[in-house]
Image (tube, rainbow, N blue to C red; front, top):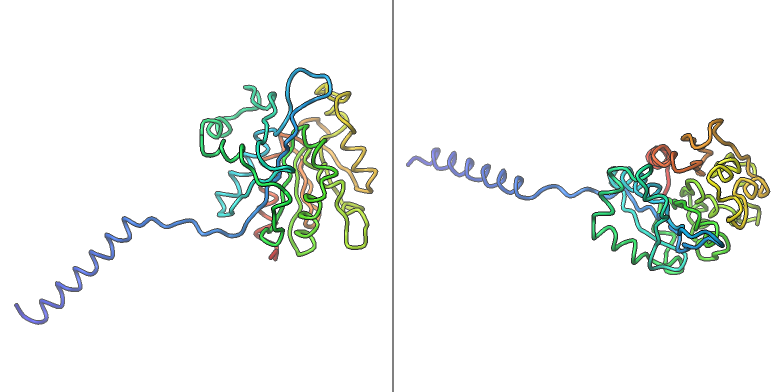
Length: 263
């Protein structure tokens, strides 16, 4: 066999080996940063028989958008551990196919049983914080010093603060370095007084979210039609009004992450 022929055969062998390795070694997704998603630990109303907790699709819609874009999503709750699911959010009217798939996924459901506690989080690791909703957040997002510290640090270092529906309760305590409410003068939205009345929960909650946002100096906005998707982006503060806004707020968060210069 000539030397030239041996060289050609060797080159072909190397090419085949390279192709085989590529076919058996699928590319892993490259993370573009970490997002912290906050969920409630609270599940009780004062006098209703059903339980509150996380409104499931307000997590799953955002989770799908962020992970598909290559972001790592970490779960946290005020106390850590189990995140209860709002019973109404599991009804046929609200539970879409994607949410059902997560309910059927043991690994995902285990993550909801073992969330990290807010006190154990290093804010420097995250490009954004996202507060999910469900009425439970009205009790345990506000007044939690660890959550307050995380969000303020993320925002002060160029990150994003975002929420959907009752998750905006997490914005109420946030302050600038000067001690001024972070949302003063900012356009924000969250579950409206009208919507609270229409769902029959107004008498159960410790305060009305719209009223509290306005009291803190925010420029509250809402959809003309209750329960319609409505999202407000004001700089690095991104908020969605209700469960129907979860997909749109996820896209708004993603757009701001991709267009901005967060750490």
